[in-house]
Image 1 (cartoon, rainbow, N blue to C red):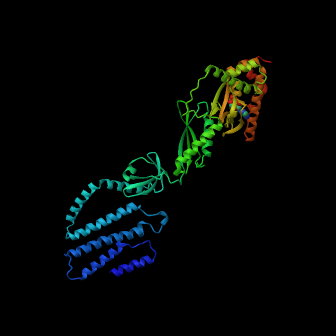
Image 2 (cartoon, protein in one colour):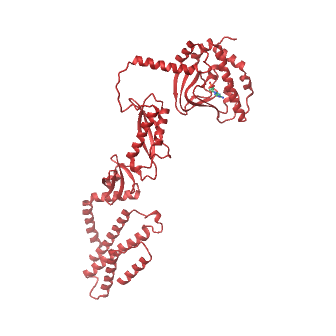
Image 3 (spheres, rainbow, N blue to C red):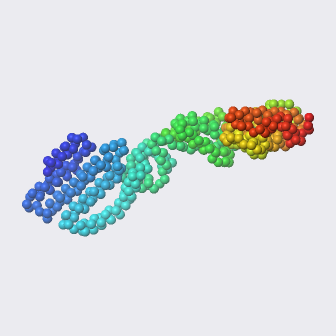
Length: 502
Ligand code: CMP
């Protein structure tokens, strides 16, 4: 029997299987051979203790060998090594123990001459005693099994434990072994690992986003702040291009607007270094963009506030005067009238994509673009609004113009009271000066040439819009031709502003 078993295993090994017969196999073969020998011996009956012991041992050992074969040929999935074993090592080990326990139970019933009841009672009592004594160990073993079955943690994964990054080195029976960046090993009981909330960053194959909070001055428009933060994030070492970084306003705080900058990286093993790279780049980028970091630095300075405000106000006024005076529209205005306009103008900021003017809305303000760009577009039926009602064109948005610093818009509604002829959207952050009808009325009344200048701008734009529509093969409503007539437009403006006729 022994020779047969050894020949069998020799044959299997020759076929290069993953089977590695150890002591267990040889012991099982030996006990099987002994059993066969006892069966042939007349004095060894089923009642003798030696017969029962050999049978029991052979039974347990054979069960373990069979389980090992099942493990090697089935559970480890040898036909598809890419996918790995069907169950984690811990679960397979528990299976082995259960098989051994079942075989032992069966063997003991033989020793107790077939009385399974006695064996069950004594084994139940034993299990209860062991269960109580090993309560903690068992809790950890089951938690470890759950962790491995779920595969929520894998060896090589980085996670944050008590705010400290660490890598999973081993998922054991009782505990999970972790190693921090400082090389310190943490042995965390499995029950703790499975019950606490862990932040798992993964192994770095998939990019992970980290948040960075930066406080920036209230005086910096969010569009500028976001642009600077994104530039810093893109240039930081370790940041990936996709997914791209994101910058968002998070909250208005005591001395700063707090922004949340989210940057993605695969450097999960060196989170501290990545944080350093991003925060350092943020400092340099802000410095180059002329944006201060208002906290945590607290600077106490004594100022002559009234004087400084006066200087700042004068600086602001001369900037606006230069902008408005530089427009063809207002170039010939007397200094005093220009000053009145400058004093009346209100400065407004708009974010990327925001609508400054919406087609079809009523409006009575003229916008002068100080900084940034805007896109002028009209919908399919926009021509109807130019023509002050009626008619309809094709649907779909038609881009009419891109205006930049020093351009103005909104003059059409302001001059005639007609609904807005187009939609104007900020393309990036922008700053404008806004003048209302009541600000402009005295200026128009004092200088009727200005009305003509504005009307010419309106005509040019209406012609450009018509050309854009024609290019799109749109049918123009007949009434537009009448409306485009300069004389009638000027007449309407005069009437609207109660200007003297000429
Ligand atoms: P208003 O009609 O008041 O509101 C929309 C504004 O878009 C309009 O005034 C013009 O200032 C501007 N606008 C309309 N059509 C054009 C165009 N073809 N080119 C440039 N700007 C335009």
